[in-house]
Image (cartoon, rainbow, N blue to C red; front, side):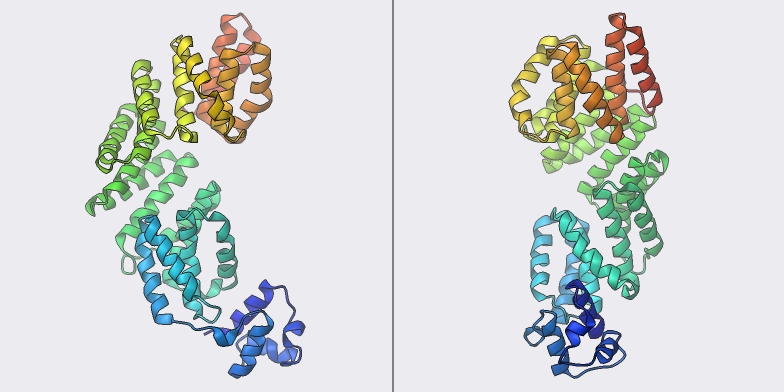
Length: 419
């Protein structure tokens, strides 16, 4: 056990000097030797030093065998995002872990805790584990190192720090070994990596890893995972211009989601199918699938507003202004309670001002808030969609200079043409 290094870690965590800890117990030089594991002090001395940094050493008990069993059992719910079991084991481990638990077990706990915090939506708590692992980085063994890189990639992916996520996922790929890990860990890594590749617009490689992941999960009958990957493949395929194939992928996902009665993903799937028909300029089918998406979604969620915005946009393109106005007015009150800077909220208000208010009001909102936020978040599809909408509006009223500015914005963001 690295008792000295643990003592040093807790001293530094409390911002205490060696002089403050050593006073009246041992010399500073002797404490330094203890902290660097160059000597072994008697238990009474160790207890006094730990007490000085606020830890009652004598009351601590380390149940290493039980901890190891729980850490091993934790891997399955972490892999499969099983919230209840993940939380149960997390709480059990929290009660057992102590400052004198074996270092390798503490390291394994903090590595796996990163993923647990993601699943349990406790992202703010990850930093404590990252600090611990940074301090003990050189002692992370081969097995924990794979999980460390994989979970760290997952963490940065959740934060949308995609370049960092990509780096750590690639490190995890080099650490993976079929002799050490279950192949489902590789499948999960492939899927997470494909999501990040999609965000950095490496569509071909994203599709490749998504298909590799799908093959493994399909062989092991992990149908819920397969559903999510079909969604991902549909998205990547659509970005590559293969719209008909993308629709088939989304329909495959829908079949699996219906089997699980997964309303959340059914709403996402129907929205994506609608988007594909919008690209194909089949507005009636797009409207049909958006209406289905709204039936599955929580009316107070951002996901609902996202689908609602697209539906209003299509109704406007179809010159169904009465439907646009009805949907805007029916949902105005609920949108007022949503975060103002969320892009779905801003999109709703842009549509509201554009359809319900005069030009002066929506022009200011579009120029000063809406488009700058779209650019900041690199939302290429939305930039194209609404720049093209305004270009057509200005062209119809003879404002050719403004129309050309809007059309140039479409061309500058010509990643995928939506309408």
